[in-house]
Picture 1 (cartoon, helix red, strand yellow):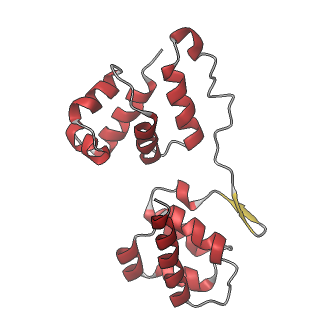
Picture 2 (tube, one colour):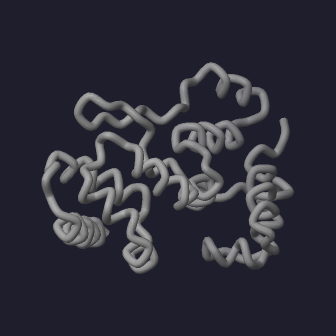
Picture 3 (cartoon, rainbow, N blue to C red):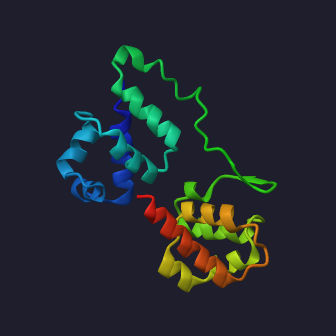
Length: 178
């Protein structure tokens, strides 16, 4: 069986143009550890793999199944058929609209473009995310945007400043969970 995790890690590292030491530093591990993962000598912990998989844009369910599959003895690895399992993230529903969550989009430009045309996003929120200064200072994550829309998207007449306060509030609550 192919070293699936190692190949994915190597592809992600090379795509970013990073050395093994630089890539490892992003996750708090050494360059030699990344080398061992890439060669298949050692498998990363599930926690570490999930962080790397998220950055590789591998859906969470698929990442878990890949990790489990490589941990199994070779004779049992074929029991986990990734092609037959639905690993697509479920659409998020805000009102009548169904769409993939912003948390699944890695490129900030794509997030901003989608927000501008998303009917679930109120005008004040669209204006906030169109503001280059706000975007440069806050660098909101897709997860924060999903929460903002979910919790405050029904306030259609709210002004830009209220949504700015709402994102601050979301960050405080998310930070307090850890």
